Amino acid sequence: MKTLRALSLLIALAAVASASPLRVFFIDVEGGQATLIVSPSGQSMLIDTGWPGFDSRDANRIVAAAKQAGLDKLDYVLITHYHIDHVGGLPQLAAKIKIGTFIDHGPDREGSDDTRTNFVAYQKAIQGAKRLIVKPGGHIPMTGLDVEVVSSDGETIHEPLAGAGQPNPLCSTEPKPEDDPTENARSVGVLITYGKLRVLDLGDLTKKKELALACPNNLLGKVDLFVVTHHGFNASGSRAMVHAIHPRVAIMDNGAHKGGNPDYWQTVHDAPGLADLWQLHTAQDSDKDHNVAPDFIANLEENCQGKSISVIADEDGAITVKNDRNGFTKTYKAP
Image 1 (cartoon, rainbow, N blue to C red):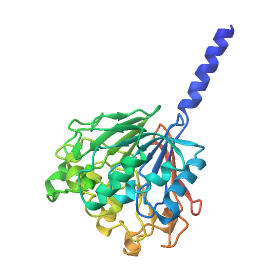
Image 2 (image 1 turned 135 degrees about the vertical axis):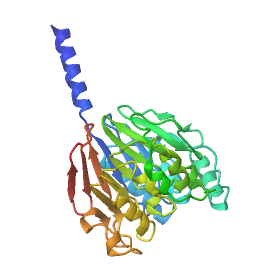
Image 3 (image 1 turned 90 degrees about the vertical axis):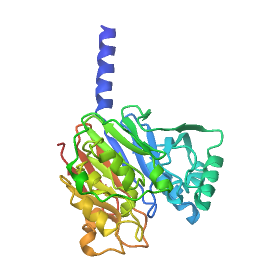
Image 4 (image 1 turned 180 degrees about the horizontal axis):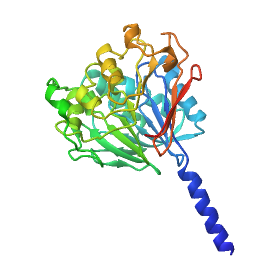
């Protein structure tokens, strides 16, 4: 009888654990990226670390978000590529919070003075730590989530993900993109799956590599939450990719004067099935018609307090997004 009761308790606890939500924190690092993923099991992965300097502004904001999430360490830190707005904050962050494993695409491939400097600083900061170099088709082992790598080091997956692979008619009208020799094209991109929920983050992947994922067949399928690639710069955001993935909710980690370009903004805004686009900042260099309503923007002014956007998502695909500046919250029902 005691064994039966113990078994029932374990089943009940497992059911509670499986019902826990996925949490995502879009931390404002003023036009860089720092996206904190907290799995239903409590494991964490930070995607990129923002800028260096500014009295450790970005590292402090990331640590504050981790504490808000109830974390005293980061299980994984994924560096999409070696531009300073993505990897620059890593040394300062590593000095402030324990990090389990660092994830990246391997050596710096751009070879500019800036990326060489950034990569040397990164190598120094992770010396002696666990490091995972990922390739397309690989998986990041987070309990309760399927985190599949879809791009890395200039390569992309060649086979469709589950449920994907349909011909993409938008490819025929997509302008031919230019080659991109920079680290942007080397970005680690991931598709995170939790039950029926799918979240896509491609770092700063540029158009030619985006199209490799979408043309002639859509290898990604549809997603629920789309982290707008490359802060909304026009070097990314191919219509054939953005419209093929049919995002229900999109979040743009732009800065006041970084990203949020009107053309890319319009591409996301017009994506089939999109309920809402959210922004971390008002795009000050754009116009009213290419910024969302104030309730959907975390920071309205250039000189801001660095407010974030947070997401709670269930395994059935329901998504709740909160603007931490004003508490405005909107829930998107499961499809």
